[in-house]
Image 1 (tube, rainbow, N blue to C red):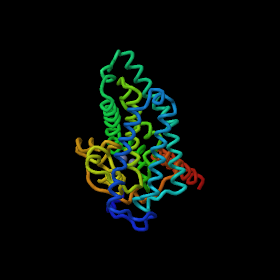
Image 2: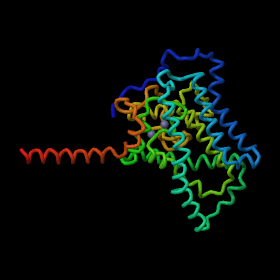
Image 3: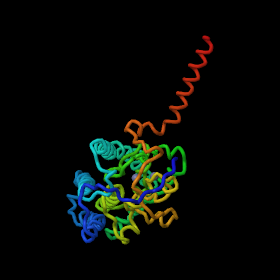
Image 4: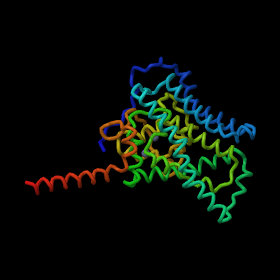
Length: 318
Ligand SMILES: [Zn+2]
Ligand SMILES: [Zn+2]
């Protein structure tokens, strides 16, 4: 992997006028305001709204679309500016995540886990009686704990890395980039033990939306740097851009998708920021290349064997 210096410079030529210090401070509070709004929505909504099948999809879409809109108003780096090709790729992965990946995760992981829980007679009824915010915190912690270790494994084991590398080949960060990656990786990172706990749907949906909002802001081309009370606990764009940097050692830190507190606890936290993101020669992968990436070593071996076979027959003819 090529080693390049990490740049923390803000590129010039921003589309938007520079904002005043006062107004920038308000921008910096936006991620935290989203989390409060999400908690208030799920905590205060009537049961029918919480359980309507479209509510979670509508709120999730609103989070992603609104942050994409904010990128236009106060962009972080010109080099990360959204264009048609990036938008269509991101859209493809958002739809893939909401359909095939979540279906596979439900059928291959969640449902078997629920069945095992029922047959073993495991009950966590106590969790149903916790205060709402504590239930939400539990959802966040259980999911993020699994994601942290899965992500760390992906950076430390070649077969797992091959599935995760396409996510690191993205050459710019935007609100929906957290959804972009090889489908095997997207499935693996979706695994969690949450199905073992008895929790009300409102707390589960609230936790999921908070995780996706944090991850969305951590990937967004948005000039919003949350204050300490947020960045001590939640992953920000500074933390995550460093994880996406071109410097190999810097990619081996800040593994938490949303709960940077875990990196602080497990000794993988690193301070910093990057404006240049990507892998090797900074070549952007197409969707096809992202899908085939984990199989590249096998494809190369087959090609090599075919080439050797061809060379042998040519030599035999001669
Ligand atoms: Zn990574
Ligand atoms: Zn990322």
